[in-house]
Length: 327
Image (cartoon, rainbow, N blue to C red; front, side, top):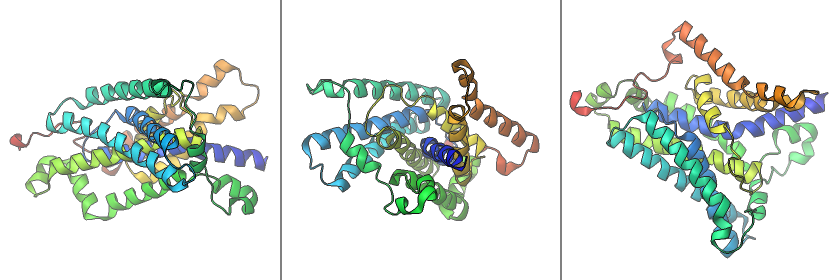
């Protein structure tokens, strides 16, 4: 029984890591007042950009150098995610396009680009077959050296690749910056009332651009984790499923606080795969369990709305364009 519970916890953490990256990035973005519904697309682009970087490095680089095997796809993933975030920022901040429409368009674009290159990258260069970056994937999946010596505890909590632990570190650091620093205070001021922040001398446009791009870069790492660590370096079209949307739902569950996303991501990850641990379920019954994360999110949304605590509400200017001339 203990072994089964440990296995469930481990799988819940594994499933929750992409959600933690996506939700942390989206929280940072939304704190500036930008609602980026393009996070699912950004995660796809982060994943396929890492695949492209790893593909070229495995083809022409020294695969015995584990550091570069990890660094190249890591930087490629961040760069691809930043480009997507810059596109969103330019359209919504500079051109003041509708944030909902722009985000949904970028999701469609990101999924399409990811599936196109993921399904045809090797064919474009005359190799054919499915992309399988086993060498790079193995480097990403390297666990902590002492995990095997800790028995069940080591296997449950210390047998993940570095991207898993990096997600927790980024979430805690983001929570500290937002709650304890001048930068975080300014960012929250921009998200609550950009006109007042502008009058106080805060560069609203700069904060919105930085928050959106940094948030997008973090979210893209969720795609990289899914491809390199979870799958092991193989691309599967539409393999992300609805994880990008779950990450956005997790933002509401975490009431816009990155540190709460850690618990929420593990909970959502567990709810996402709990049906696998219930014996005797029919296939059509299993699908019902996949809506549990969304049901929990709706429940949290209802409860926070009833309590009406300001710190549990989204930024006041979320999704609204800022017109400086109307200040």
